[in-house]
Length: 502
Image (cartoon, rainbow, N blue to C red; front, side):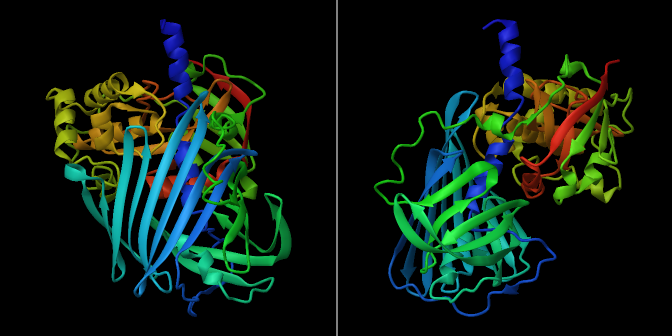
């Protein structure tokens, strides 16, 4: 492959796979529809109907009308508990290739579907993500990863959590009336976070699935800023769900669910998530200034303060981005020892950024070559990640240690590994998620920022430090923060007003 062809492919992969695992979160919490904070609803306090025999729920998954996967939920009564097993198989078209994701969730709940413990695994090719948890009073005790890479963490629970796989079963035997509203404190294992779920009963209607008529109850809600609608039968079984990016799940059977899945994975998922432009940006990687009109933000809940920080300025719907300069000299020598509590948090390990692990620390030390200059070390680490990771879409939740060992990935993997190496070197660093211009449009993307006396952007996927002016930062931080951009997908538009080069 010649240099031009390599660069072209490289830029395509720069669009990264972040939007795919956001979709997976949508699937994993497909019964978990989070309502607006100001909506009124009552927590479920009365008892759910007891299940005395095993239940099986098979669903076919469609994207824009093409079958791309299936999901199955098994609920089995075991003494005074329920064993809930959920599996998702999804085949997506990414860059013209069919890519497969598999997830497995196993959980134990009491007869009110309050979660006791769970195990979650997501795999794609050679890459996998594992997490298990156990409820202990008002805390969720977590074990993340496997073997020597396993980490222990805990989070505070605001309420006794329920598991998404059992939510529909709360409605078994209940009389539901239009206007009824219910709230559940749901724990989502894919993001390891707890959120309140609000479901509203819209009314009754008849729907047809595979030529069979069903009497259904229609409910609506919102998942992370995306509206959803789903239909239950009178026993509380999910018949159909529509929502995120044209994703639809419909009732199926064991003999039908896994059959006739689109061999190409349906429409290219990159293109479905992209934001198109009427005016193109020549030599985008060289841009030092970009002025855009942002449309659609008034109709969604999104904290626009992130658009008005550091290299970005946002006023009255107009976003201006100015490429920053790398300082000539940092304000400290390695390691950073400042007193700022906030800055110290950017030096600590966190979920999927195992900066204190021996292998991460050893690699950071090796690449730094004993330099105490934060700017030089940051440049060396960025270049090392760029050169040593094979550029390929990976459909999994990335972890820095696994990325270091597997040496493969897209922008998610590049950003978490670089962030971990920077922190291990004593340089405060954070992951950023937003948009970048690629192939005539803006695609969702992840990169890194390092504190070198001031925050400086770094993109190990595109080998940039600082990044070009087409990088639009929407959020900072890990999984729990990154899911906040789901509400933007398919709802915002961008219009180029002006751009420039040095």
